[in-house]
Amino acid sequence: MGKILKGETNVHPLFKYLFTIKTYKGLRCGAKTSDDFLNIEIIEEALKVKICHQLWQLTEARKNSEASKKDFLNSQCAEEIVKVSQDHIKFISFLLFKYKIFKNDEIKMHMFTDPNLVNHCTNMLMLVGLCYLNEGLHHCYATGYFEGGLSYSTLIIEAIKKLNLRIRPQALNIVESVSIDDISLCSAIGNKYGDIYE
View 1 (tube, helix red, strand yellow):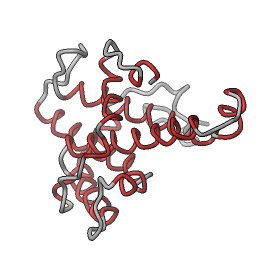
View 2: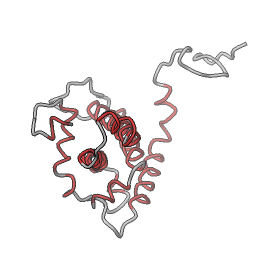
View 3: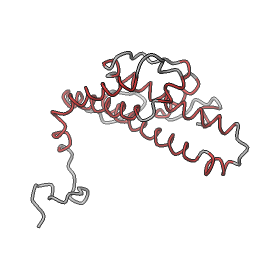
View 4: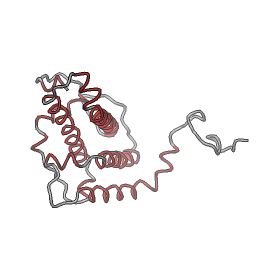
């Protein structure tokens, strides 16, 4: 983060979203209906705004703080730092998932090739992104990204419900497609073969 604020451009491609911290206050949400939120680019942009606003608040708090670095990190803004760190990790997870579906020349990943799997994963990616976004909408309102007059939380919940309807018929098959060892499966009922423990 410090490198970006100092003007350096040589950062890992996953962290390039942090350059948005210089321009995020001028962004406005293009979504006006719940269907508009069924767009990965809009979800990604809103998540960037949310995290960049949190980071901006922290940098401003640090500038205005007379506390030592240690006290600032461990006491004064410890909770805020943990929250933005968690949101950053969630966003990186979102991006990594996205790059398994959509090609990115800077980040080489094994991509999904089956069209049905790509469709199901796209729906799950949007669902994950909207759930992450819904956890802290106030940051998007505070920056003006979400403008007054629309209930964006209602639109996002409606979009989540639509995605749940899309995913529901395939959810069990998708979950069962991942082989889980009995050691990892915390089941009181039985093992992965369906045998009941005695």
